[in-house]
Length: 196
Image (cartoon, rainbow, N blue to C red):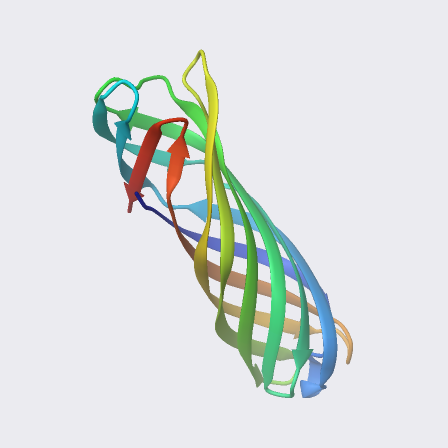
């Protein structure tokens, strides 16, 4: 059973890093922003009661936060990053015996990223991607029972952004990310396999 979750993340980060004039060295960055999770369709099977069905889940826009520690090599940056994303269910439609489901999705990720900088003076454009692990958890409630299912899985992301260089050591960045994870969830005998 596998579930695909794809979402774009846009955030503004304040970095005590060496973006400006392609300075090199260690840097730290932190960012907050909005997380847009795509609608998922899914199949489910209850191993206890024997019913199954299909459905879709839509998500509200939620918050995202990331922190990273990296090294700027001049035009290439490498970093390790921790992130957290949260999205409430906005609508869940199911067949086969499950109704009135509410809840939210939380994703905690650990990523290794590589980024290439294009120095335009005051502005630096950059792009790249990352690979890592994500712990994805769904908290659900059907009106009478609270349940949660989770898994730790492979994740990847694509990154594009622009940095406004305030000084040699400080930059403000606007960034877009496309984040994807691939996971199996089990809710006390209820297996969920979702796909976009």
